[in-house]
Length: 441
Image (cartoon, rainbow, N blue to C red; front, side):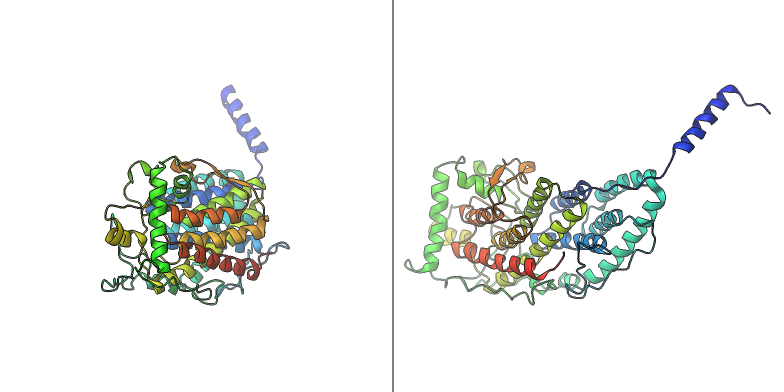
């Protein structure tokens, strides 16, 4: 039987291609991991996760990825035995497993279980999987199987952190008879967000109240009382900023650090964008900036993001413990009742008690951990808010950025000075504990 000339040519092409086809090791870069983290952030913005819950969405997938790269590695030390209830993950049995691929698989797959809009992660995941299969199907399949095995293991540990139980606990009860207690604020008058977050299992803190701050100034509307003076400071600073117009640096700072996922309306010319990112997401963004600046490899990037996310997670538990203990009323409520009924803060007041300032606590913790990783006097350009129509800001250290984030709450009209200053101290204590106690290298 004779083959036609064209058939012989096609057969030759196939044979040549077959001869030239050779499985190559799959390359996974730090950019791949940061793209996965970015996607999770975008989905949380879309799905409107509260800041405390967002911190949980970040931390567990990061830990899963870190535990995979830490095994049989002279540089890194597993978190098992360091975090409550976390035991060593199963070892990779196949010699064909690429641990970086497995780590990224674990990050994507565990993240997918923690958000609502799963289709967006599935699309991203499947595009990567297709590339990896084409490059080295055997290595990919072994790595995927191992990554999924670790996901199942980490999920079992994660689901024991009391989060599921808090979903069915009662909502926060408003004490309308006590003028010092928190009341829902306009425009949506939402219920208090996550009133039971202090019941979430801590990872490094010995309890949610380990760094319980001093109480806020005693509530009093007497003109010579410290509390009243702090209330009027919020009002007067806001009035001064408003008079100078929307080009003032204070407004730029307030908007840059707004990080309120619950903004539902604009505040006239004083609002440049509707903000959806959370405080934790902003600091995850800063961590990524430092990783890019230092050209960190995959493992180092996972390490930095994991340690920072642990600090953010612990900071929210510590802060929320105090918020619902002191249960302090927001400036907006008191100013409208006793000073100026038409006054509105530059930023929209978020739906939970005032003391301490969440952004101050989270910023104090994250900046302390980042300083321990990258050093002090670390200059960087923060482009985290560019996607929200806001300009770049340059900082000479992570601590300076945290201080600006904290004071932004006064400029925005949503916190008294005590909540800002004590919150920053509280967060730095959390950050120091995580930086010193958690041995990841």
